[in-house]
Image (cartoon, rainbow over all chains, first blue to last red; front, side, top):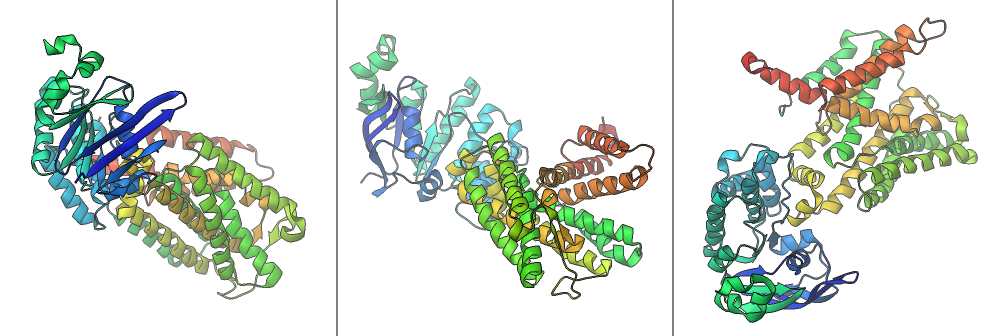
Length: 240
Length: 324
């Protein structure tokens, strides 16, 4: 039933355990949020799911097939796309060329890829920037570019690392709306987010991590009221 | 400058050269421009398009030069076969270097490439029984196309012109094809490229291997044209730098750039040496100073290379008001 399955993932860096026996499932069409204080292992988990890190134990499965040990490009071609917390546009290429790189994973036809890239830029609201160099974009625009680029690979599951992080307040509603639209369109999403107002509004389910371990998993309401989540992350003020 | 008309003009001018010019000195210059341009273009495949800057490409050039020269002198094999053998050997070594590039990045990769060409230099200069050591190998002249014994310089112009045009087309492919775009992504940010499904490692290795094979082909033709293979020349770091320099001067990662850069270097070098060099000249060595100054000035005013500089300035001309 689950599309993405994270089963018993453990990852150590020397003496530090970044993820300890983390398990959860994501159903098709679901939008699952991941929260937790800095250093709780959220980004490490993303690196493992997307194939950049190899877990010390456990397995990631997409639609039943194991992804463990596959290279990131294979993982992407199998249907998992991601954005980076620290944005990584191809700075020297134009915006449309950036998105084309993603599209070329699914088509061999350069002209077709370009057309698709323009469609996607339209969808994320960057159409008028298509021919500008990526290095000229603002942070908010770069977030949109990363989103378009990842979408161009036609993912079955999209991993978003901090959609609103580092973006000015005015740009947040637009980005949130974009994520909502993608979800409504049937896409399965796994979203790391620090902004509690944003994540509780968009996520159907939230997984909370603390010191590498899963401490809660449930509806936004249940998770934000969970004793351990409040103690570890949200603080007393949040519940009052 | 995305259009191909400057390239068409360049190659057409080169093709007209032998018809207009009879002077052997000028034709020799034209042949060398095309050969060095092709070598720089082959370097550009790895250094420019894949972003794997190598200062050891002389190794591949030397492999091509030696393969044909040795097979020809020792067993009477046609240099065309030698070219294929050299390209095959270079591909194999290119794969090794490519795998290294996945382990070593930036300056460490550059150092590994230099070491690699130095190892081949040592082998070529010490393995006297087989390579004739540091004496080098004279390439015997046997008339005919199959043996590349072409006495007429005009014939050589067209031969290397075919090679140069082939190299240009390879680069044009890297400019416009799916693989080319993917390679550009790898050059810009390898991890981001991987996350978008680009098989970055495989592409890098393939680009370096292709670059190596093409460099070897240039080496074969160069050796057959010049008629002598000297290990200290064909495996020198100087030669590697020359490929790299021509590409950077002309415009790294552009298809015509390496040819323009090679033209600038070759013309400067030969004309300055003819004017100031030689025994009894008053200012021995001044040509090297002038040469260096011209290179510095070029990079000062056209840091992206000549081709992008021309592109920008030709485009600006219609709007004189916006010029700084």
